[in-house]
Amino acid sequence: MSTVTTIERFILEHQPDFARGELTQLLYDIALAAKIIAHKTNRAGLVDILGEIGATNVQGEKQQKLDVYAHDIMVQLCEHTGRLCVMLSEEQEEIIPIPARYEKGSYVLVFDPLDGSSNIDVNVSIGTIFGIYRCLEDERRGRLEDVLQPGRNLVAAGYVLYGASTMLVYSTGQGVHGFTLNPEYGEFLLSHPNLRLPKPPAYYSVNAAYYSRWSPGVQRFLDWLEGKEDDSPSVSARYIGSLVADFHRNLLRGGIFCYPAEQKRKDGKLRLVYEAAPLAFLIEQAGGYASDGRRPILDITPTHPHQRVALYLGNRSLVERVEAFIRQEDEQ
Image 1 (cartoon, rainbow, N blue to C red):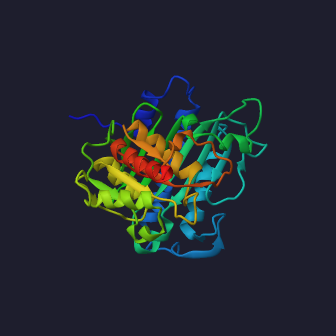
Image 2 (image 1 turned 120 degrees about the vertical axis):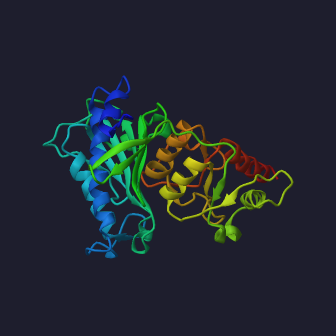
Image 3 (image 1 turned 180 degrees about the vertical axis):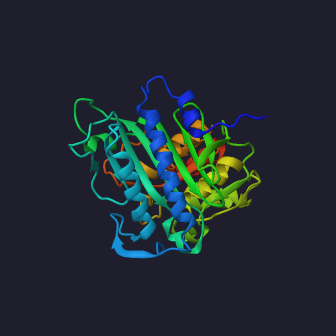
């Protein structure tokens, strides 16, 4: 009989030496939040949780009802535990301090509670992205500085994919591991241990409708992907428009996800702190690489909690090729 490994057992058996229990429990807090959010997303067509609530978030995007629900669940399950010093969410402009009545913890949680929420009403896969840092000063309660850390400082990161099945994928710097929620037991079970990017890569994911808005170096890279040069790779286009879903497919099949900066908008669109950096941490743990086109995502120190960035991540050979095209453009 094969061994069934729950996420709780796996986390306990593979916790890093520095975790001291707090990180282990925090990861399980996030897993519990994922179960609750998954329950709501799976019932989206049956209850009044679809559509917009009439407000906008800090990004100027219309908030969906599930966005707010997912944000509230993450905060409610994590703020009182004594494991965090501060949080940051896409859905709130300011950092989320831990109330004074609760014990301060050693970790910082940054998260996008429901990435791809524009796809909710059409039943396309969506997800949660999270990253965990250490608090910079143990004797002080959380501050803005604690969330403005480069991705190299991440101690853990992951995402939850709400699709045909619900999956939680995470890393604490010891490889990338995936768990699938068994609805019969209500528990995440280890289904994808030690994920590594396959070679050769199979796919590229980019919204080619924006081609005319990109710089010449990025346009040349897309031409190369599409087979217009002699040394072009043999890859197929696959684009869902939901970051977690596109990332997850490419992690399992190999490839590159691209969200270039437009020429009129040099900083890109995706958020560095709670989207790009956590996924960059994961892709490097899986043997890949993430860049903004000129430098590693993990080396960028954010200056604003909702800072935007261009993003290329996937198999190293593909990401380094787009860097080469952009470097050639810069030198001309």
